[in-house]
Image 1 (cartoon, rainbow, N blue to C red):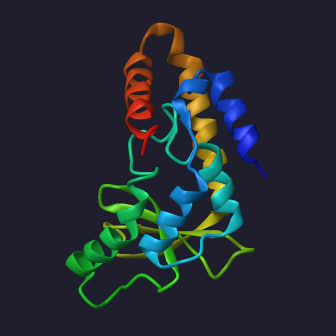
Image 2 (image 1 turned 45 degrees about the horizontal axis):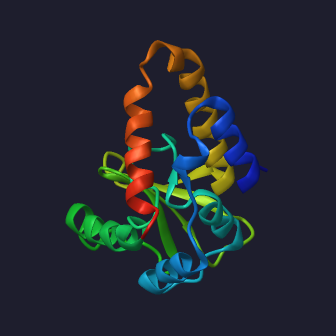
Image 3 (image 1 turned 30 degrees about the vertical axis):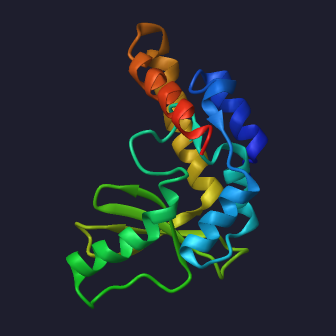
Length: 176
């Protein structure tokens, strides 16, 4: 299983991030998240937040995945489900949404601290789908794709906009 330290090392080695564009959450940030959603986050997810919970360079920059957006994502997903599904489909009470990409989101159930399986909602499917993966397994898969992209395009200048946005985000969230 990927760890927070290994994750950071791979981001830097691949050119996806620099030390300056990796911004962790503090314990106070994590407490704010838990207060906002009314849930206790599992240790495996806290490890991610403490490694790069505010910014991880250009990693996952095409979606909401970081603090402070995390404060609102579960509530927003609940509102979206009501709008799209009415009363037919609802988030479980212990659901924590950690990734939002337009009308699609991923969550895990905080009561399942050991299994840490991921569940997806995609508007086109109109149901919850179990991912055959854990949180860190999902991060590993996304990281592999991003590493391949950066290996192919980093020297061509194609990644410059991603890296510029990463620097801007890191500057914005450092003092939150």
